[in-house]
Image 1 (cartoon, one colour):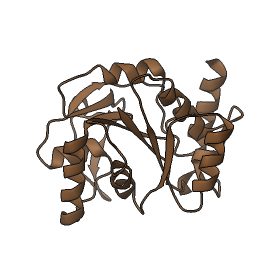
Image 2 (tube, one colour; image 1 turned 90 degrees about the vertical axis):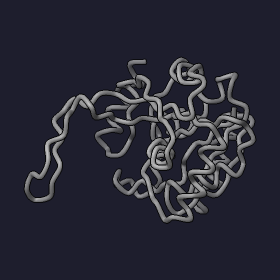
Image 3 (tube, one colour; image 1 turned 90 degrees about the horizontal axis):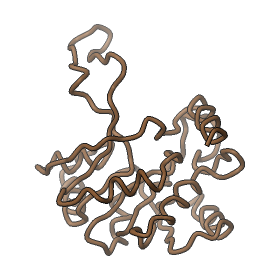
Image 4 (tube, helix red, strand yellow; image 1 turned 135 degrees about the vertical axis):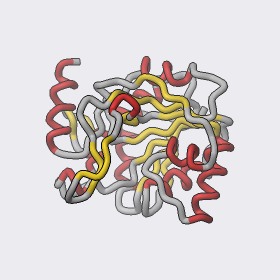
Length: 219
């Protein structure tokens, strides 16, 4: 199976002034954590890293420095969805894993739990919503049933043909989604939810950075 690691974002919300995937966490660039875990999975053949023009050389430097094999850096797009579509052009396997470098706390065991789920078009890990979520603008407009809500995580596993087709249709339709499970569901495919991990934090703000650093020091 091939894997796509999304790393083309600029990470404005962290306020770092540079892409967060290169932030040092416990002395190591954030992107390297995901690369090392994926490379440690025997089921993963090739890792395709989507980068932007400004950081593709730096990404390759870290790949070389940490001796991570079978990695191909490609240019991503202006949006996350564009980057996935660009990465899919380099995928040769019938199933594909999609991950993002902003989630550095994945483990080999967690990835393998996802990989063993077979005969599903899409496998998406989620964790329960612990807080109340409401819909509205300045005023509340709608209640949402918390037990039916899912906090979506990555990595995710897809049938490559189905995911490619969904991206091709979305490009024609002008449809944009924030993640690929939503995209394939939009085009009529079933999406299987499986248990995620509470520790699988997505680094978005500096508070997330502090939390991840503390968890890394405990591991």
